[in-house]
Length: 334
Image 1 (cartoon, rainbow, N blue to C red):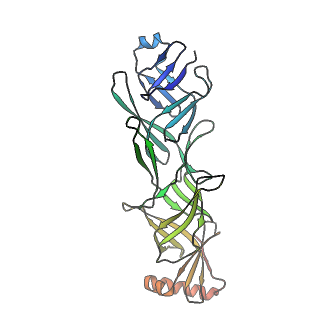
Image 2 (image 1 turned 120 degrees about the vertical axis):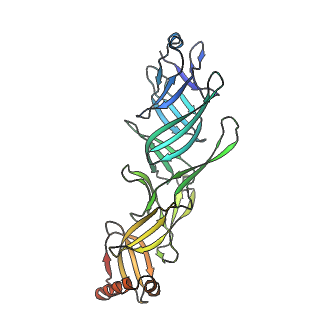
Image 3 (image 1 turned 180 degrees about the vertical axis):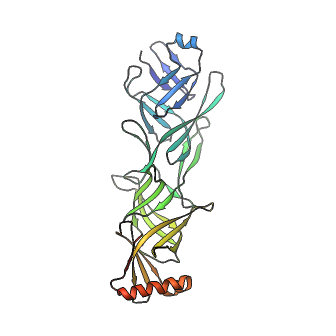
């Protein structure tokens, strides 16, 4: 028998039939396949009388609505009608490389409040408009939860996402912050990557434009201009993303850009380079990626800066550049 399913004003599952509406006590859970289930907390006799199983398994698709609540749209089956929607009102309380955790609060028939955690599994990606999105893993095609607002970078160089939503009971606007703990990489020209898990291929690969191609070590920053969102098929918001760190010479005589992510965690972005001795006796590192392709970034070290910070390295590079010639330069891979 097919039923109509909705959520009532108390954030509880309601089952609509021709002559009556049933609101059984129970709790929502998400199984290993990211399917939505509802376990009934009702006596066997009551379930038998109402022709209900201990667990109702729903088939459908996940979506994030404009108030950052989870929306589950049902597909057509023998037990449910197509396009019935279950609006789960709550809040996203945490994110991980392969998880999104949603807190759901409802009341039972005795007026007692219950809190449940729904955990969706999947991976994070950036969509074509540089917005954050979560790909919910499914056997067929993944569902995509799109975060349509603008993301930021906090003092620890991590991506954060602030969103406001209306509380279920108080109706007040509440600000929530999601923190994505990862690290930055620069792998190709006009791309800026934030890795959450390399093994899971979870992270954000943003289309970006280098703000300044010529960098100086004292500034300690790499800046990109990023467009986020869409308006008439064009980016509607542009921002400058600044990654702060310190330049270091690595063992291969290339460059590392060390970024401090807070709590003692340091990660380095490593580069190869084409190295040139300029006419002003400075040394220019034209950075390259892992395939020795140019990134369009040049880091210029003055001879005073090099002598003061690593005189031995300066002399070694100067000798290599002199041997190769100013125009030819020296190539230093990863």
